[in-house]
Image (tube, rainbow, N blue to C red; front, side, top):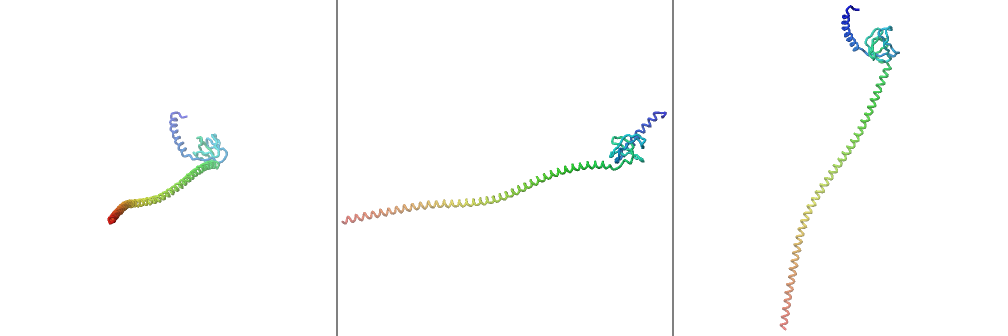
Length: 227
């Protein structure tokens, strides 16, 4: 034991940070390894069967490789324990059992993905079907509007033609009304002239009758005087 304890304490205080740095560096450089198919493999405190067993690892367990020796390797277990195990039981590639588990998990994910994609595909197909139906309805509505517009144009042309014919007939009717009014006036005038003519004729006949009557009376008076 050192004669001066404080020297030991100083040396210990210097070594602890250095060990921490080395440990951190080794932790950062650790590589993953997998336990090969076998029975449970022991992890010891040192390189050799004489060292104490601290844990057991099973087929497919993943460990961090910290250091490699001739026959042993220093590893870190999943729970953080560190120890030495025979290097021949380590492999860079995962064991078939682990690969099968991984493939099964990936297969389940793929099945779920396919299910989701199938569902989305069905939804898209439904949307597409509805869109096609709406498009067909829109096209039919457009065609109907086009037909109605053409019919409206034809009806409008007919209405315009009928209106023109009505205007023409109205003007002709006005001309006929004017002609009828003129004819009525002429008819009234003719009727008036006819009445006057008949009156004149009647008066003439009356005067002739009176004249003849007087001549006849004079002639009778002369005959009576001669007798």
